[in-house]
Length: 381
Image 1 (spheres, rainbow, N blue to C red):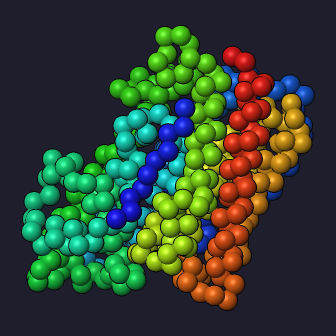
Image 2: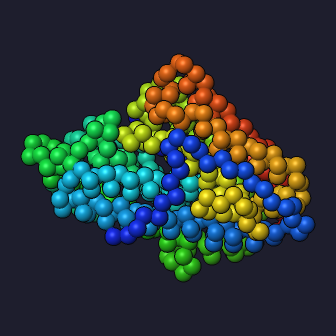
Image 3: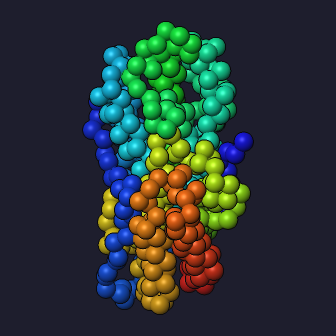
């Protein structure tokens, strides 16, 4: 069984920022070179205000929209509302996957990422659970292993094998009954919204898991960050980590594990065929963190890593941006067919998948070997 591994290095309208499943967003960035670099404290404050908060706010809004759609569907299962649920589920994924570029703070320390985003689904265990459980209480949901909670068991229920789920599956009286599926769906949904609420509240000053006050106020009494440099390195290491998770040649790599085995069932969003969008949104999240923006903008914020690097070493900044744009753009040639099929076809599709991994691996190398040393050299507070 392969589960998601984290790397720790030092009714509501859906707020959709959905990347196309066929074309990646690879807009280039043009701007003037700053003459005065932003301070490290300003970069961190901008990251909180203009990257993390809007991303996690979109995630929570989309999760609440999904919850509303699931509630409507559960009251009267029909295929139109099933389609609405599926669209809302993909909306959650868009915001969550871009946020994986900055898995720092409580989402990591409270283990919330694996609680909401572990795959692949243990289908036999899930079917057994449906066959033998009728009352999915919050306490019971909290006791389940990560493979039976979060995004992907929901995906399994509402998409089904090969996307063949229908509303009729939620009304059957044979085991597993439709009523059991609906109860599990709503319990999964409520548990997911609860965890996403915790993730968002970490970026609220004064909350019980207030991360803003920690990352924006380093010092000798701060047990997490003694310096602004440490905070920026944590952010950059997280950007690098998601590149490694998506494009690296590790057995648990999002792409490599499926590419090397040609086993489509190991992919992250298998039932929905949403994996290409997941991967590209991961790298778009890296771009967001570097530019200090969210919501599709490719114009860097004044107080961004981009402008810090550009003011000190324009050539390095150009190299980093070329790496980001190449990685995002590499999806364009590969996403004409679903990821699970691309890794098995031999008419150039596997080569295209390999090109995606290579582009992301190159970006990670630049972050590790050039951006990290830059921060160590130029950030002194």
